[in-house]
Length: 425
Image 1: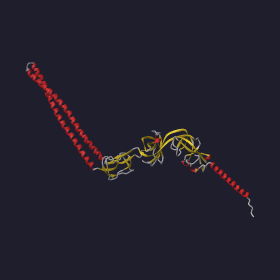
Image 2 (image 1 turned 180 degrees about the horizontal axis):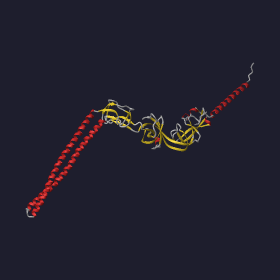
Image 3 (image 1 turned 90 degrees about the horizontal axis):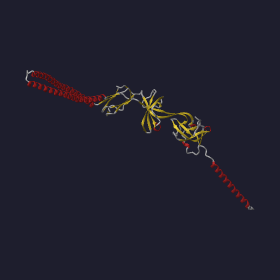
Image 4 (image 1 turned 180 degrees about the vertical axis):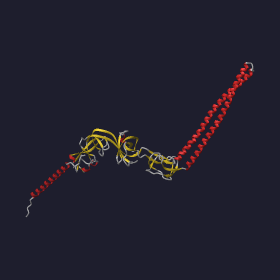
């Protein structure tokens, strides 16, 4: 028969309780220990990181802009009158001289107007010559009349002197002598009037001829205008170069002022680049520049700066100082780099992805022989195309990562690990 042992059952319960308490304490301690551990640093592929070493030396401040090659001599040829395109003789790319005809226009109404203007000019010229002859004839009659009157005046004056002398000697009546003197005085007065009438007639003739000459000039001007418009139906290049474009088609009706062709001299090109308006304030005339045509680099200088900004950029013209590479042509895309300032004995690094001039940015500095990176605050100064000045936060010889590290901004901690290690540059 079994005998009850209550003390053994009680011992087993106590033992189980103690074991449970120990397990709870151990689990709590482990949990607390894990909570005190720092999270492991994130890892980055070091082979894709773009490092740059802090260097002390001279840094050239440069401004870069994209643009195109533009001819210095460009001629747009507009239509001188409304007309229809009759024939297109040359297309884009053709070489031309100043008198080379590119296309021909047709305007029957202009031909009729030119013919009518020619007749009007000839008629006005004939009227002028006719008036000139008539006025000269009238003036000649007046001069003849004056000459006859002057001759009569001289005769009457001599006769009056003779009659006066005879009257003084008593050989002729004094009354007859007085009559002779009166006649001579009348002739003198008439002669003065004729001279005044002749002077007035000469002035009147000049005025009439000037009026008719003005009509002749007006008719000649109209005729020359129609003649030039008629000649302009043969559209000529005007300069030596190449045809750039002919934006019309055969049979098309064009209005006066419509651009018919564009001609440029391809041997004289300049670069027009678009510079960001934030950097354009530092660009000055005659600053040195280089133009990359993707087939060679040509030196030049700044020759013009546009006064206005368009879409956040300012147009800058670069005159080329050297010969262009083979194959360069108008409207070809180029890169222009303008030298602003040469900074002497400064710290600088390559330009980070998010590094703006005169700002403070967080960059990862490479430590522990390229196996880790720590975030540091770097104060930046003036920037160039590929480099930027370091004002504070780094020392000469430090290596930082220039790549886009924004993926680590949301992660806890200021360190990252590189695998494989980063090699300084």
